[in-house]
Length: 91
Image 1: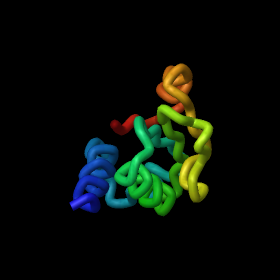
Image 2: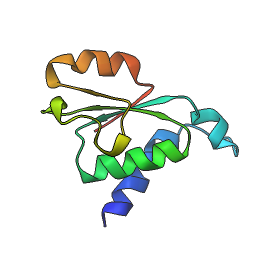
Image 3: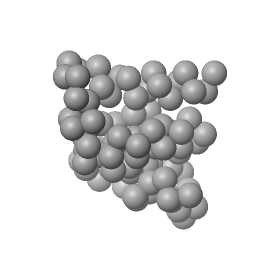
C-alpha cells in the first residue's frame, strides 16, 4: 500500500506536465519532502531515478541524509529555505 502512496505523490508532481519526455522536464529539478518517513524515502528513491535533487524537512535534521537519499535535510526552523529552494514541495 505504501508504494501506491509513492506513485500517487510523484504523479502529482508530474500532473501538470503533458509531455511524453517527462525525464527531461523533471531532471535537475528539486523536490522538497516535508517529513522524511518511509513513504518520503521511497519517493526520494523514485525522484533520484528521474534525476531530481532531493531535500527534506524533518523534526530531527541531525539524523542526516540517511542512505544518501536527500542532498540536504532541514529542521523545522529552516522550513522557509526548503520552500524557496524546491521546485516541488510534497507533504
